[in-house]
Image (spheres, rainbow over the protein chains, first blue to last red):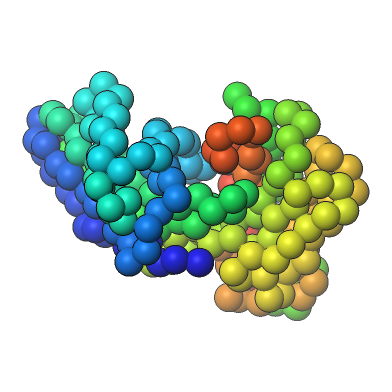
Length: 109
Length: 112
């Protein structure tokens, strides 16, 4: 089981600002998923990235998979209070997923 | 909604008592999982199941047992609860093809 490191652990910003959060590993990811979790709920999948260098966009969210498939980033443009939540990356290994500790994002109005 | 429910959603119990959490799915998926979520540790896999009566341990399985007697139900049992098992427990199911987890809403367990 490889260790996933997410940074920063906490991030508090004002509405309208941009931000980037990171997910890193010392090993190569087979594939990587990003989830968002809101208070009192379970995590919900945002995206899956598989190919090194891949970039995926989901409205104001941009996901990038590193060329060497050892890192990934999530960039949010013009953050809104509705983006508040815990952002988790997860590495897939067959039928098992290993999660990072997450980045807790708070977007203040 | 994805058709996964957990019960109970909240439970307070005392050290040494047995506790069973239930996960029920209506999706007929083969794979089901139990995770616990704690501050500073993220989501950690306790046990998972890949079919009726087929289960395997995750990274934090000590003190927990599971059972899956039918496809739709996956039970997590704490035989003798300890304060270190105070946590939020999430059940998840995996659909076919994409290795994507769909989570339940969680069960918050407090062991006094």
